Length: 121
Image 1 (cartoon, rainbow, N blue to C red):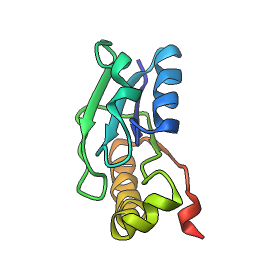
Image 2: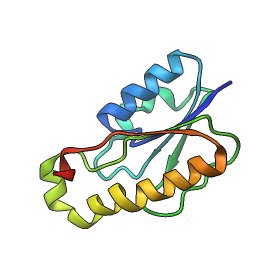
Image 3: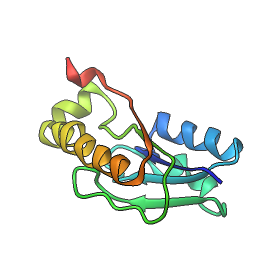
């Protein structure tokens, strides 16, 4: 079974991606620090055998045991309003988070995809 790590899994995009990958038969590992995401978005997935949730800030070292086939990096505060409230956290997730997840992808031989944000402008 293919395994995918989705960061920002409790956010709008991440939760919908988690749903889709579960329906496609993947083992989904959702990761979120919940500063703007909500467990309500993924509560229906929590009892599923092939769903794991890690409460974690990707700007810190990221470790996921076992193999990973894909890493989808969707972690970021949710909107320009949130960026202004949390400028340092926003920059850390976009820079250190990406760095940490690229390192994990390299270590696991996983394919990596990042979704950028309007914050980069």
